[in-house]
Length: 201
Image 1 (cartoon, rainbow, N blue to C red):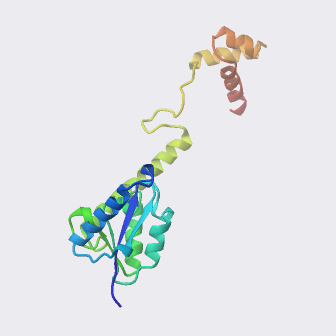
Image 2: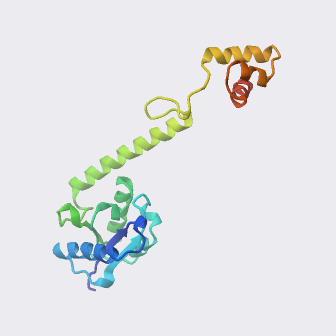
Image 3: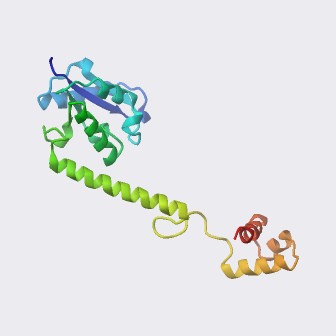
């Protein structure tokens, strides 16, 4: 059974359908041919999808991967054709490898199967691990309401701690929310938040 060399082209969705699409597809296909691949026009698959979309969210890419046969090649011009980040790219090239096919990237200046390029794969795995760690820290910080630099997420309180304590004292003394808001030149909502925060504590 003859092997087939496919090219997958991710087209920028911001541009809409333009005459330059054909040029982009031709550029990617010619780059693959210069690397020695035999790419027929019907084996160049394009898809209009954002770079931030994971490979699993690219229907044409997934359809193409499912039809791969052993020893087929799937070539992208730049790595974003395989996914949105290092973790996603690594997952895609592993999936292609599991199909018995070979993933390549024309712009890297190497004709080596990406999965079999141990140096490249190690670098990608290190980047994926870093991304995973960063994402875990970001989620943890978000859950605690803390920004990446250590500050709290969102607007800072309009009244400092001492003033908030005074507000609580005034409310305990029976002053109305409206009266306290006027006294400290702040909004009615701010006084309500201070009052309600104590109830939740």
